[in-house]
Length: 263
Ligand SMILES: C[S@@+](CC[C@H](N)C(=O)[O-])C[C@H]1O[C@@H](n2cnc3c(N)ncnc32)[C@H](O)[C@@H]1O
Image (cartoon, rainbow, N blue to C red; front, side):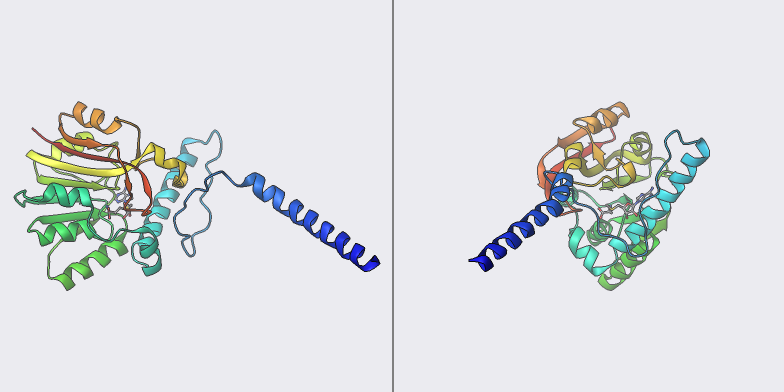
């Protein structure tokens, strides 16, 4: 009897200890845990921008974050495990649907990444230029294009500083590449009749996804894109905000999908 009592006391203490340990963890766990990108080997935690940062501190933060973006995507888009976890390796479905039946011409794939869309377009006869800051992702794309016997042109550059040209492209692809700041540039760079195909996340997806470094460039508010692109002079051919499988997470999330044309 004494022994059973002792066992019961130890069991009670054990479960109390469990509760004490679990309680703070439970208290900190959000109702739906956010999905983060895979950790990047060798990349420490994000730098923190001081409150009331000076312009110099802001500039340094921006440059550190840009460098981290380059390293992050170089890794995610070329490491086999990270690729399998994050990336839809097939070309973007909206792009495939939109390009079908169009006469191939010149195409700019902004933030090209590892080339899934550029290679698809090249296979359909398009002359594609892909631009990205992640030089290893571009090299990966070139190696794959060579293997498949197609030609793509790649350039290592920051799209914010890149010369998009004037009346140059029949198609501009913005696939999980942002587009908030690009409407005027897209309008100028497309040939008359040329189209832009844009897919990204709706702002609702931030409930599930981690926004790295407070950078919302691939997240858009309801109707934000059609307003921006209409104001820049483009005609909205198609616009949707469906819940669908995202190409970068493979989860069902609210997305934004737009096709717009230069008159
Ligand atoms: C989510 S991936 C999308 C890749 C590709 N568009 C696709 O759909 O497969 C984002 C890409 O944007 C690139 N990127 C981020 N900021 C950039 C910038 N300022 N200029 C050019 N590329 C950039 C990253 O290196 C990465 O390859």
